[in-house]
Length: 365
Image (cartoon, rainbow, N blue to C red; front, side):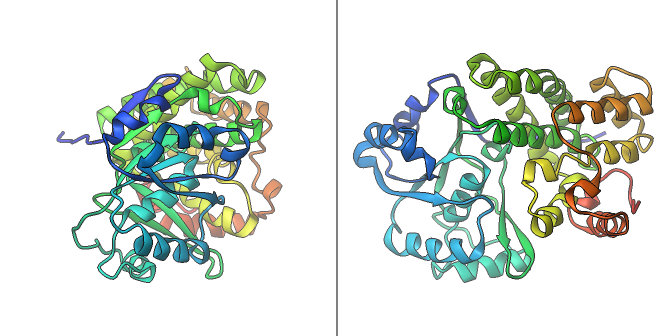
Protein backbone atom coordinates (compact mmCIF):
# COMPACT_ATOMS: atom_id res chain seq x y z
CA UNK A 1 0.00 0.00 0.00
CA UNK A 2 1.38 3.40 -1.02
CA UNK A 3 0.54 6.47 1.03
CA UNK A 4 1.79 9.98 1.76
CA UNK A 5 1.35 12.05 4.91
CA UNK A 6 1.96 15.77 4.61
CA UNK A 7 1.62 18.71 6.97
CA UNK A 8 3.86 21.80 6.68
CA UNK A 9 2.70 23.67 9.81
CA UNK A 10 5.32 24.35 12.46
CA UNK A 11 3.73 23.80 15.89
CA UNK A 12 4.80 25.63 19.07
CA UNK A 13 3.11 24.15 22.14
CA UNK A 14 3.54 25.30 25.72
CA UNK A 15 1.66 27.41 28.27
CA UNK A 16 2.65 31.03 27.74
CA UNK A 17 3.63 30.24 24.16
CA UNK A 18 2.00 33.40 22.84
CA UNK A 19 5.16 35.20 23.97
CA UNK A 20 6.90 33.62 20.97
CA UNK A 21 4.84 35.66 18.49
CA UNK A 22 7.44 38.39 17.89
CA UNK A 23 10.13 35.77 17.25
CA UNK A 24 7.88 33.82 14.87
CA UNK A 25 7.04 37.00 12.95
CA UNK A 26 10.79 37.69 12.69
CA UNK A 27 10.39 41.42 12.09
CA UNK A 28 7.45 41.18 9.69
CA UNK A 29 4.41 43.41 10.10
CA UNK A 30 1.00 41.82 10.59
CA UNK A 31 -2.75 42.20 10.77
CA UNK A 32 -4.35 40.74 13.90
CA UNK A 33 -7.70 38.98 13.46
CA UNK A 34 -9.39 38.23 16.77
CA UNK A 35 -12.70 38.07 18.63
CA UNK A 36 -14.58 40.88 20.35
CA UNK A 37 -14.07 39.53 23.88
CA UNK A 38 -10.28 39.68 23.45
CA UNK A 39 -10.50 43.32 24.51
CA UNK A 40 -12.65 42.57 27.55
CA UNK A 41 -10.31 39.94 28.95
CA UNK A 42 -7.19 42.03 28.39
CA UNK A 43 -5.76 39.76 25.70
CA UNK A 44 -5.84 42.39 22.96
CA UNK A 45 -3.89 44.94 24.99
CA UNK A 46 -1.36 42.25 25.82
CA UNK A 47 -0.79 41.43 22.15
CA UNK A 48 -0.64 45.10 21.18
CA UNK A 49 2.11 45.68 23.74
CA UNK A 50 3.94 42.54 22.63
CA UNK A 51 3.96 43.34 18.91
CA UNK A 52 4.29 47.13 19.01
CA UNK A 53 4.93 48.65 15.58
CA UNK A 54 4.73 45.21 13.93
CA UNK A 55 0.94 45.34 14.40
CA UNK A 56 -0.62 47.59 11.75
CA UNK A 57 -4.33 46.69 11.98
CA UNK A 58 -6.69 44.90 14.36
CA UNK A 59 -9.89 43.19 13.20
CA UNK A 60 -11.86 42.22 16.30
CA UNK A 61 -15.51 41.98 15.26
CA UNK A 62 -15.39 38.42 13.93
CA UNK A 63 -18.67 36.61 14.48
CA UNK A 64 -19.33 32.84 14.47
CA UNK A 65 -19.49 31.34 10.97
CA UNK A 66 -18.17 34.28 8.87
CA UNK A 67 -20.69 35.26 6.20
CA UNK A 68 -19.99 36.67 2.73
CA UNK A 69 -22.02 39.83 3.46
CA UNK A 70 -19.62 40.72 6.29
CA UNK A 71 -16.44 39.19 4.94
CA UNK A 72 -16.64 40.75 1.47
CA UNK A 73 -16.32 44.41 2.53
CA UNK A 74 -13.66 43.48 5.08
CA UNK A 75 -11.62 41.61 2.47
CA UNK A 76 -11.80 44.51 0.00
CA UNK A 77 -10.75 46.96 2.73
CA UNK A 78 -7.73 44.89 3.76
CA UNK A 79 -6.55 44.33 0.20
CA UNK A 80 -6.90 48.06 -0.50
CA UNK A 81 -5.48 49.52 2.72
CA UNK A 82 -2.92 46.92 3.88
CA UNK A 83 -1.80 45.53 0.54
CA UNK A 84 1.85 45.32 1.58
CA UNK A 85 1.38 43.65 4.99
CA UNK A 86 2.86 40.14 4.66
CA UNK A 87 1.40 38.32 7.69
CA UNK A 88 -1.84 37.70 9.49
CA UNK A 89 -2.05 36.58 13.12
CA UNK A 90 -5.31 34.78 13.91
CA UNK A 91 -6.03 34.81 17.64
CA UNK A 92 -9.27 33.01 18.41
CA UNK A 93 -11.41 30.04 17.48
CA UNK A 94 -12.32 28.45 14.19
CA UNK A 95 -14.29 31.40 12.82
CA UNK A 96 -11.37 33.76 13.48
CA UNK A 97 -8.93 31.44 11.73
CA UNK A 98 -11.36 30.89 8.84
CA UNK A 99 -11.61 34.67 8.40
CA UNK A 100 -7.84 34.97 8.46
CA UNK A 101 -7.46 32.30 5.79
CA UNK A 102 -9.75 34.24 3.48
CA UNK A 103 -7.68 37.39 4.09
CA UNK A 104 -4.47 35.46 3.29
CA UNK A 105 -5.54 35.07 -0.31
CA UNK A 106 -4.75 37.78 -2.83
CA UNK A 107 -6.82 37.93 -6.02
CA UNK A 108 -5.53 39.63 -9.20
CA UNK A 109 -7.95 42.54 -8.70
CA UNK A 110 -7.84 42.54 -4.91
CA UNK A 111 -11.60 42.06 -4.77
CA UNK A 112 -13.61 39.56 -2.75
CA UNK A 113 -16.03 38.78 -5.57
CA UNK A 114 -13.11 37.31 -7.49
CA UNK A 115 -12.20 35.10 -4.53
CA UNK A 116 -15.82 34.03 -4.16
CA UNK A 117 -16.07 33.20 -7.87
CA UNK A 118 -12.97 31.00 -7.60
CA UNK A 119 -14.51 29.14 -4.65
CA UNK A 120 -17.77 28.60 -6.51
CA UNK A 121 -15.90 27.27 -9.53
CA UNK A 122 -13.46 25.18 -7.48
CA UNK A 123 -10.52 26.99 -9.05
CA UNK A 124 -7.06 27.78 -7.72
CA UNK A 125 -6.11 31.45 -7.60
CA UNK A 126 -3.00 32.52 -9.52
CA UNK A 127 0.23 32.13 -7.60
CA UNK A 128 1.36 35.36 -5.99
CA UNK A 129 2.40 37.09 -2.80
CA UNK A 130 -0.23 35.51 -0.59
CA UNK A 131 0.07 36.34 3.09
CA UNK A 132 1.54 34.07 5.75
CA UNK A 133 -0.70 33.01 8.64
CA UNK A 134 0.28 32.50 12.27
CA UNK A 135 -2.63 30.73 14.01
CA UNK A 136 -3.05 31.09 17.77
CA UNK A 137 -6.16 29.08 18.72
CA UNK A 138 -8.05 30.02 21.87
CA UNK A 139 -10.26 26.92 21.62
CA UNK A 140 -9.29 23.26 21.47
CA UNK A 141 -11.19 21.60 18.69
CA UNK A 142 -11.37 23.11 15.23
CA UNK A 143 -7.96 21.92 14.08
CA UNK A 144 -7.94 24.90 11.72
CA UNK A 145 -4.49 25.88 12.99
CA UNK A 146 -2.98 22.83 11.24
CA UNK A 147 -5.24 22.49 8.18
CA UNK A 148 -5.58 24.46 4.93
CA UNK A 149 -9.40 24.68 4.89
CA UNK A 150 -11.84 27.38 5.87
CA UNK A 151 -15.62 27.57 5.69
CA UNK A 152 -17.30 30.71 4.40
CA UNK A 153 -21.06 30.96 4.80
CA UNK A 154 -23.70 32.56 2.61
CA UNK A 155 -26.87 32.60 4.69
CA UNK A 156 -28.94 34.50 2.13
CA UNK A 157 -28.25 31.81 -0.46
CA UNK A 158 -28.53 29.02 2.14
CA UNK A 159 -25.13 27.54 1.35
CA UNK A 160 -21.51 27.41 2.43
CA UNK A 161 -18.24 27.62 0.54
CA UNK A 162 -15.10 25.64 1.29
CA UNK A 163 -11.86 27.58 0.91
CA UNK A 164 -8.82 25.46 0.09
CA UNK A 165 -5.80 26.85 -1.70
CA UNK A 166 -2.19 25.58 -1.76
CA UNK A 167 -1.14 28.55 0.40
CA UNK A 168 -3.89 28.46 3.04
CA UNK A 169 -1.86 26.22 5.33
CA UNK A 170 -0.79 28.25 8.36
CA UNK A 171 2.92 28.87 8.55
CA UNK A 172 2.86 28.20 12.28
CA UNK A 173 0.46 27.27 15.06
CA UNK A 174 0.95 28.43 18.65
CA UNK A 175 -0.78 26.22 21.23
CA UNK A 176 -1.01 28.11 24.50
CA UNK A 177 -3.37 26.46 26.97
CA UNK A 178 -3.34 29.57 29.18
CA UNK A 179 -5.39 31.33 26.49
CA UNK A 180 -8.12 28.72 26.91
CA UNK A 181 -8.62 29.05 30.67
CA UNK A 182 -11.43 31.59 30.35
CA UNK A 183 -13.29 29.61 27.67
CA UNK A 184 -16.95 29.09 28.70
CA UNK A 185 -18.18 25.57 29.34
CA UNK A 186 -20.47 25.49 26.32
CA UNK A 187 -17.69 26.48 23.93
CA UNK A 188 -15.29 24.06 25.62
CA UNK A 189 -17.77 21.23 25.04
CA UNK A 190 -18.62 22.11 21.45
CA UNK A 191 -15.00 22.55 20.40
CA UNK A 192 -13.93 19.35 22.17
CA UNK A 193 -16.64 17.36 20.39
CA UNK A 194 -15.63 18.94 17.09
CA UNK A 195 -12.16 17.50 17.70
CA UNK A 196 -13.63 14.08 18.49
CA UNK A 197 -15.57 14.23 15.25
CA UNK A 198 -12.39 15.10 13.35
CA UNK A 199 -10.65 12.08 14.84
CA UNK A 200 -13.42 9.60 14.07
CA UNK A 201 -14.15 11.10 10.66
CA UNK A 202 -10.53 10.65 9.61
CA UNK A 203 -10.77 6.92 10.39
CA UNK A 204 -14.02 6.09 8.57
CA UNK A 205 -12.55 7.83 5.56
CA UNK A 206 -11.46 6.64 2.12
CA UNK A 207 -8.41 8.96 2.31
CA UNK A 208 -6.98 7.58 5.56
CA UNK A 209 -3.41 6.35 5.86
CA UNK A 210 -1.55 4.60 8.68
CA UNK A 211 -0.17 7.85 10.13
CA UNK A 212 -3.49 9.70 10.06
CA UNK A 213 -5.24 6.71 11.61
CA UNK A 214 -2.66 6.40 14.38
CA UNK A 215 -2.98 10.10 15.20
CA UNK A 216 -6.78 9.85 15.14
CA UNK A 217 -6.97 6.86 17.47
CA UNK A 218 -4.67 8.57 19.98
CA UNK A 219 -6.64 11.80 19.73
CA UNK A 220 -10.03 10.13 20.19
CA UNK A 221 -8.88 8.16 23.23
CA UNK A 222 -7.44 11.26 24.86
CA UNK A 223 -10.50 13.39 24.13
CA UNK A 224 -12.87 10.79 25.58
CA UNK A 225 -10.70 10.60 28.68
CA UNK A 226 -10.01 14.32 29.16
CA UNK A 227 -13.16 16.12 28.03
CA UNK A 228 -15.47 14.92 30.84
CA UNK A 229 -12.84 15.82 33.44
CA UNK A 230 -12.28 19.22 31.82
CA UNK A 231 -16.01 19.98 31.85
CA UNK A 232 -15.96 19.42 35.62
CA UNK A 233 -12.87 21.62 36.09
CA UNK A 234 -12.59 24.17 33.27
CA UNK A 235 -9.93 26.20 35.13
CA UNK A 236 -7.48 23.27 35.19
CA UNK A 237 -4.45 24.29 33.09
CA UNK A 238 -3.10 20.74 32.78
CA UNK A 239 -6.42 19.48 31.41
CA UNK A 240 -6.63 22.44 29.05
CA UNK A 241 -3.15 21.65 27.74
CA UNK A 242 -3.96 17.97 27.29
CA UNK A 243 -7.17 18.82 25.44
CA UNK A 244 -5.31 21.25 23.17
CA UNK A 245 -2.78 18.57 22.30
CA UNK A 246 -5.49 15.99 21.60
CA UNK A 247 -7.32 18.45 19.37
CA UNK A 248 -4.23 19.23 17.35
CA UNK A 249 -3.55 15.50 16.89
CA UNK A 250 -7.07 15.19 15.49
CA UNK A 251 -6.37 18.21 13.30
CA UNK A 252 -3.19 16.64 11.96
CA UNK A 253 -5.14 13.46 11.19
CA UNK A 254 -7.90 15.10 9.17
CA UNK A 255 -5.46 17.53 7.54
CA UNK A 256 -4.64 14.53 5.34
CA UNK A 257 -8.08 12.97 4.96
CA UNK A 258 -10.66 15.81 5.18
CA UNK A 259 -13.83 15.09 7.09
CA UNK A 260 -16.65 12.78 6.05
CA UNK A 261 -20.34 12.07 6.57
CA UNK A 262 -20.96 13.59 10.02
CA UNK A 263 -19.48 16.92 8.94
CA UNK A 264 -21.36 16.82 5.67
CA UNK A 265 -24.56 16.46 7.70
CA UNK A 266 -23.59 19.27 10.06
CA UNK A 267 -23.53 22.09 7.52
CA UNK A 268 -27.23 21.83 6.71
CA UNK A 269 -28.10 21.40 10.40
CA UNK A 270 -26.20 24.58 11.25
CA UNK A 271 -27.70 26.56 8.36
CA UNK A 272 -31.29 25.43 8.79
CA UNK A 273 -31.55 24.84 12.53
CA UNK A 274 -28.88 27.12 14.01
CA UNK A 275 -27.09 24.32 15.86
CA UNK A 276 -23.55 25.30 16.84
CA UNK A 277 -21.00 23.50 14.65
CA UNK A 278 -19.34 21.34 17.31
CA UNK A 279 -22.68 19.88 18.37
CA UNK A 280 -24.04 19.70 14.81
CA UNK A 281 -21.16 17.49 13.70
CA UNK A 282 -21.01 15.31 16.82
CA UNK A 283 -24.55 14.36 17.85
CA UNK A 284 -24.81 12.05 14.81
CA UNK A 285 -21.52 10.25 15.54
CA UNK A 286 -23.09 7.10 17.07
CA UNK A 287 -25.38 6.70 14.05
CA UNK A 288 -22.50 7.20 11.63
CA UNK A 289 -20.26 4.84 13.63
CA UNK A 290 -22.93 2.16 13.34
CA UNK A 291 -22.94 2.63 9.56
CA UNK A 292 -19.14 2.69 9.34
CA UNK A 293 -18.44 -0.51 11.26
CA UNK A 294 -18.29 -3.51 8.96
CA UNK A 295 -17.18 -1.58 5.90
CA UNK A 296 -13.43 -2.13 6.32
CA UNK A 297 -11.51 -4.47 8.62
CA UNK A 298 -8.62 -2.08 9.33
CA UNK A 299 -10.98 0.81 10.06
CA UNK A 300 -13.05 -1.48 12.31
CA UNK A 301 -9.95 -2.44 14.29
CA UNK A 302 -9.00 1.20 14.80
CA UNK A 303 -12.49 2.32 15.75
CA UNK A 304 -13.18 -0.58 18.12
CA UNK A 305 -9.84 -0.03 19.84
CA UNK A 306 -10.96 3.47 20.85
CA UNK A 307 -13.94 2.00 22.72
CA UNK A 308 -11.95 -0.97 24.08
CA UNK A 309 -14.31 -3.59 22.74
CA UNK A 310 -14.61 -6.13 19.94
CA UNK A 311 -18.36 -5.58 19.71
CA UNK A 312 -19.93 -3.19 17.23
CA UNK A 313 -23.01 -2.74 19.42
CA UNK A 314 -20.95 -2.03 22.52
CA UNK A 315 -18.84 0.56 20.67
CA UNK A 316 -21.92 2.41 19.44
CA UNK A 317 -23.51 2.26 22.91
CA UNK A 318 -20.34 3.58 24.59
CA UNK A 319 -20.12 6.52 22.20
CA UNK A 320 -23.78 7.33 22.72
CA UNK A 321 -23.40 7.11 26.50
CA UNK A 322 -20.33 9.35 26.36
CA UNK A 323 -22.31 12.05 24.56
CA UNK A 324 -25.37 11.69 26.77
CA UNK A 325 -23.28 12.04 29.92
CA UNK A 326 -21.97 15.32 28.53
CA UNK A 327 -25.54 16.49 28.02
CA UNK A 328 -25.58 16.04 24.24
CA UNK A 329 -28.74 14.51 22.77
CA UNK A 330 -28.19 12.12 19.88
CA UNK A 331 -31.74 12.05 18.50
CA UNK A 332 -32.12 14.37 15.47
CA UNK A 333 -35.64 15.22 16.64
CA UNK A 334 -34.09 17.11 19.56
CA UNK A 335 -32.62 19.53 17.01
CA UNK A 336 -35.87 19.95 15.10
CA UNK A 337 -35.13 17.33 12.45
CA UNK A 338 -37.95 14.86 11.86
CA UNK A 339 -37.44 11.27 10.69
CA UNK A 340 -38.34 11.97 7.05
CA UNK A 341 -36.19 15.09 6.97
CA UNK A 342 -33.30 13.18 8.54
CA UNK A 343 -33.43 10.52 5.82
CA UNK A 344 -33.42 13.23 3.18
CA UNK A 345 -30.51 15.01 4.86
CA UNK A 346 -28.56 11.75 5.01
CA UNK A 347 -29.02 11.18 1.29
CA UNK A 348 -27.99 14.73 0.49
CA UNK A 349 -24.99 14.64 2.82
CA UNK A 350 -23.75 11.34 1.38
CA UNK A 351 -23.62 12.91 -2.08
CA UNK A 352 -21.62 15.97 -0.97
CA UNK A 353 -17.83 16.28 -1.24
CA UNK A 354 -17.31 15.38 2.43
CA UNK A 355 -19.96 12.66 2.35
CA UNK A 356 -18.15 10.94 -0.49
CA UNK A 357 -15.14 10.52 1.80
CA UNK A 358 -17.16 8.09 3.95
CA UNK A 359 -15.93 4.50 3.68
CA UNK A 360 -19.37 3.00 3.06
CA UNK A 361 -20.06 4.32 -0.42
CA UNK A 362 -23.62 5.22 -1.35
CA UNK A 363 -24.94 5.20 2.22
CA UNK A 364 -28.38 6.79 2.40
CA UNK A 365 -30.02 5.59 5.58
